Amino acid sequence: MKIIMRVQDIFEIPEKGIVIGGVNPTFDSLSYDEINKRIGKQIEIQNPNGKIEKVSVSSVEVSESLLGKKNIFILLSKTISTSLIENGAIIRSLALPK
Image 1: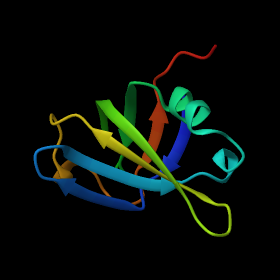
Image 2 (image 1 turned 60 degrees about the vertical axis):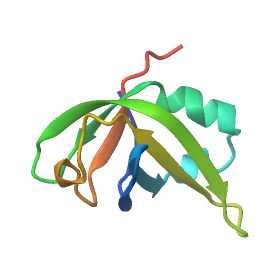
Image 3 (image 1 turned 60 degrees about the horizontal axis):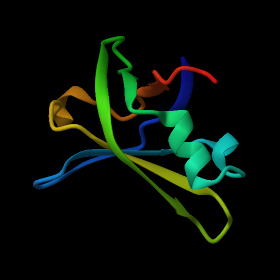
């Protein structure tokens, strides 16, 4: 399992679900499609307390700063709440390597 990022932002979009955001400098040179493939359709969230949650990914959004840094936002399925995710949690992809 590859580490995708550490959670730096958590918020809820009504009617959509929970969004987690963060950065990964190794993704700065990748296209949206490459980032999306690396994240996959399922992720593992490991909170600082060690508790692990597996959750489905609904969608991935990538924004680029003026400095060329990419911010990654992952929309999670509606099966998880913000109370189960902490800032600093490690996000790992459960996608099979190709």
